[in-house]
Structure formats: structure tokens, C-alpha cells
Image (cartoon, rainbow, N blue to C red; front, side, top):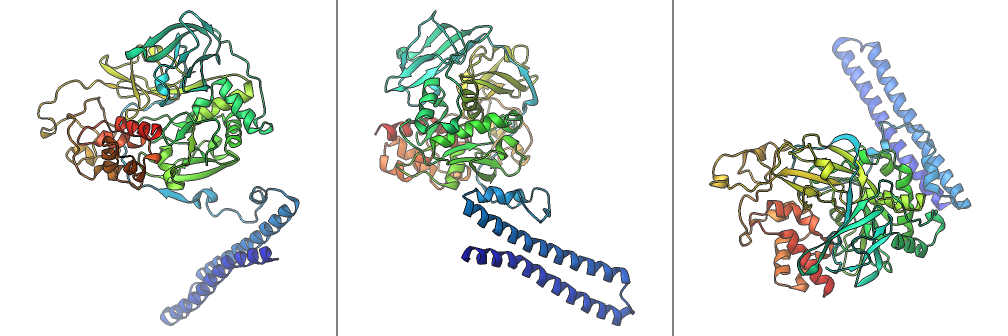
Amino acid sequence: MVKSTGGHSAAISPVLRLSSFAIILANSTSLFAQNADNASGNLSQSTIVGLIVLVLAILTYGVLVFGDRLLKVSIKEIALEKGMPADEIQKKYSLVPPLIPHREKAMREVITINKGFDVYIKGRAEKEISDLKSASYAVKPIDFPGISPIPKLLVKEGDRVKAGDQLFYDRHRPDIKYVAPVSGEVVQIIRGEKRKVEEVIILADNKIEYRDFGKADPKSLSREAIVEKLIESGTWPFLVQRPYGIVPDPADEPKMIYISAFNTAPLASDYDFVMQGQDALFQKGIDVLNKLCDNKVHIGLNAKKTHATAFTGAEGVSFHWFEGPHPTGNSGIQIHHIDPIKKGETVWTIKPLDVLTLGRLFEEGRYNAERVVALAGCEVKSPKYFRTIQGASIENMVKDNLLNEHVRYISGDVYTGKKIEANGHIGFSDDLVTVILEGDEYEMFGWLLPSYPRPSVSPTFLSYFFQGEELEVNTNMHGEERPFVVTGLYEQLLPIDTYPLHLFKAILTEDFERMEGLGIYELLEEDVALCEFACPSKSPLQKIMRQGLDMVREG
């Protein structure tokens, strides 16, 4: 009875407001008619009829709202008695047509982020997809922060592998496996300084052979069985733990798993385009994640976009809407504004395309690392999307498709991506290859002389006043590294509650207590990348952040 009464009173309140408005409107009409009568005789009959119709329409809508609330209360009581999901059933029944399209969307709570800065670069990928056949594929230990520099190799040059066969493991965490994305011959193991393993390269077969891991319904499996399957198949490393940005410990359980459905970095892939028609696979991946965190999967959406139904139609997730400049699309920034990470807590994140890989594992029973990758940048003739496999070589992607040969190839975006060669390979979870001009030419007098338009957070350049204009860029740093300059600039670009400059100084002085107090647990390199771009001191802020994260993790 208490629930019913509460529901009725909540239903009556909008009707009372509408009725009050109608009474006021009617009284105003009467007064207006009297004044008009005194002034010029009679109010036109059509005006009076129009006002009456308006009042009746408002009252009718009020009655419908009242009935709709009563209906939902009754449905909820019946559903609760029978142990059914009341919220889901309530959404299916309504007496009230929406006043505007997408009424639920219009009434959502939007988190607005004002700090940050958007950089627009020429060469955004056109929304067309071509198939890319690559001769070789690679897995790079460097893509996994925290892994030992010399992991334990399980293959040698000349060995043959299937897609899903284990290549190496971390000596400190031997239970986590790193596997081959394709079948073929291991043709090269590239080593760096001190025999550090940089790449394991596989010459792919014409037809890929897959190791069979067995199909399964994630809803019918226990958490332990899900974890075992993800580890055995090599898909576990798709998960990233915050803090530290490392592959999570399978024995841990996070307070949530977070997916950002949009990326605000320059030239980033359009996830809504890539995810078209992938609703079922994405949902299966969500079902897997829900088993790992007791149904605490969250998705961050862009309030200014119409997202793919794979995102908006996902079941068993919590939605959050955001609006703002880069780095609003970063998972860490979104998590900070929802439920900040405290010491002792962990949150796992995963990219949308990697969720599809989890879905394929249970749908097909194999490690199918197919993905759509964008080729973009101001030096690309025909920027577009390519359907390929994780770790593919970019050689055929960029062949005869460049405006200039003196360029920088980047696996990822211009902020956080890694430099690769013209025949290099895409990173483990990267879905973007950026090509821009190599900026190794000296600029005399630098910013003191008028120059070409360039992205800048400073009004020193005229291009600052033309925000939204797509510009050509290069890799020139426009200066050299120097001591920190106290400007307050970092605080304008990093939308979390901390003092970034103090945090970087705490890392450099190895002050563990201050690092923790200044929020290092909430940050990864990608979150401070914009600060590095704008840094007047040209300091390697992402490198400093990684040093701090490693110190805190190992300490």
C-alpha cells in the first residue's frame, strides 16, 4: 500500500501542474477578452476557439499522464509479486506518446566536461571499408605495460603456429598467455637492447587455421570457467586494469568494467560506423564481461551523437552520457566523473572492438582477431577503413596511397600512438593508423614570425581563433625540452580534480605519498597526452607518468 500511495501522489503532481497552468491560461483569456472588449468591441471567435482547444489539449495530456503513471505502478506491483524485471516490463507499456522524438534520450542526465581541447587534422577516414590482405602479422610485448622485457618465448624462428597458439608469457605472471592472431610460420623474432623482445612476426597462411577452444554460452558458465577460457584463448590481455594500465590479475574482481563508446582523439575511428551490424556479437561480449564483474558493466556515450544500436541496445549495462572536448572520450576521465578510483580499488576497461573478439570466441569457439582499422592523416591520398586482422602489416595499406614519402607512420593517434616503419605492424588493440609529415626541418625564429596554421592552445597563433578548422600537421616539437614552466596550462586541459604539475614533480622526486594524494591511481599516459601536446616545456609527460605508475605498482 505504501508503494501504491507514493506512486499515485507522484502521478498526480504533473496533472496538478498542468491543471493549474490551464486555469491560469483560462483566467488570462477571460481578462484578455474583457480588455479587448473594452478596447475594440469583441474578441474574434477563432481566437477564443483556439484558446479553448489549447486548454483542452493540455488537460487531455494531463489525464493521459495520470493514467500512464497508474498503469506503470500497477505493472510494477504485479511484476514484483511474480519476481519479474519490473523496469524492463514498464518500458514496454505507455499511454502517453512522446512530446518530442527520443524522449528518454532528451531527459537523460548528461555530464558536461568543460576542460580540454579539440585538435582537428586533415585526412579523416571516409566511411568505406576495403579488405586488406597482409603478408605478415606481429605481436609486440611492448604493447603490454608491466610485462617483463624478456618474456618466456615458446616458439622459435621456423616454427609453425595456428591462430590461438601461445607465443610467449610473462615470467612474473606465467598464467597469462599471449597468442598468435593468424596461422603460419614464425619468420622473425626482433630483439632490441639487452635482448629485449620487441616483435614476434608470423608469415601468414593463405587460409587461416584456428585452434579450437569450443563454442559456449557465457550465461550458462561460471565466472571461473569464463576466466579459464579467456586465459587459455589469449583474449584475457584485451582487458586493462586501472590503476597502472596493466593486464589484470584473473584472481581479482573489479568494482566495474568500463567501455567508452567514443574516442575524441584526432582522426579517431568512428566506433558507430565500425559497429554497424555487430549487435549480437557485442551483446555476447557484454554477457562475458558481466560474468567477470557481477553485472557491473558501464558504457560511456557521447551526448552529441546518435550511437549505433550495438551500444544503445546493449542489455545488462549502465549508460552514462558525456559532452565535452578531448580527453572526454578517455575511459579514465569518464570513470573519474562517475566513480573515482581510490587506493585499493580496481576498474577494468576494454575497447569496443575487443568486446567483439570476446563475443566471437564464444560464438565461434576460436580466437578470431578480425578488426576494422582506419587509415587517416593529412599525408594519405585516400583515407578510409580496412577490414584486417590484429597485428597486420601496414605495407599494403599505405602502398601508392601517400602524398609525400617523408612521413611518420603511427600505430594509434597522434597523441599516444607508437612510431612504426612503412612495413611495420599495427599494435595489439589499435584501430587507427595515422600518417603525417615528418617535421625535421628547422624553423628560424619559430613562433616570432608568421607561419603556416597549426593546432595550438595558445592565442599566439592566428589559427587558435579558427577552432574546428582541419589543419595540416607534422611531428615538429616547435621547441626543445626545458625546465617546467608554471603556467596553469595543465589544469585547463586535464578534467580531473588534481594538480598535474605537482603530480609530475612528485613522480620525478619519487615522492610516493604525494603521488597517491595527487591522484596517480586514476591516470594513465593517454589522460595526460593532451598536456604533453600543449606543454610549453616540451616535457615527456607520458613517459614521466609511466615511470610514476611503475614505481607505485612495484613499491
